[in-house]
Length: 280
Image (cartoon, rainbow, N blue to C red; front, top):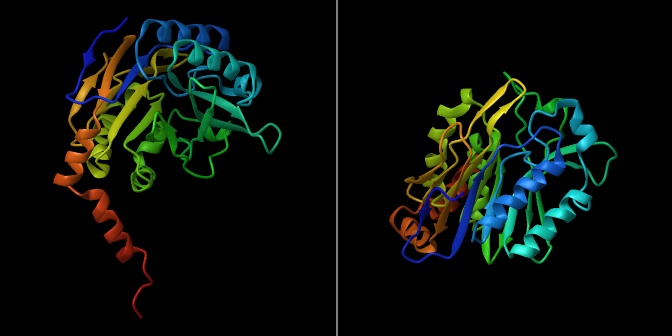
């Protein structure tokens, strides 16, 4: 279902915030849910949550359900992207292609032409209810995605609390930063403070797509949202309910924001000061 549509003056990319529950360790059902959403929308890019392919609360099952980007699940989602002519971003546990049995918490972008881009989560949450370091290895570097001539900076959940990652993407020319998440209720106030902050700091759109529903002992609050380059929330999905919305990204908003508040330009100037050798 499409619950809301937002169209800007000069839109260039329609993005779907697919706030849909995923089933723990049931890849076939979760792929079916991806296909159901993609089949109902008319958009350039459909974004699902962190670990959507397997569910977030797999725990030791991550080692069983993880697969490579050449695996069966990615091939099936490639066919969905090709059939419907749109890109699909989703989270999954990826087997490391260098070291046997190591698993990464990854964001995957599949384009309609079958190309696959992957980012591995840099900042693994390992406090309170989070146990990510028991199962995952951290990524080694940010990975800028390119889709339809638009540069996208992918981050995953806890990554958003480290502004250096988003700033790095902005200095590479990212126009959109997409954060896929599995954020529980206890994290809600923190995410809702930093989302507009990251947008203002980098004069980029921040697209945040969260898991929703209950998995084992975790309740995910939903509330997927988009902040424009001035930090205004232009769409917010429902809390604690399945909700699918469409937002249209306007590059003119980025240009205007960067003219009015040149934070990215000033970042280069500040870097020359902060990272120069200290005076003797």
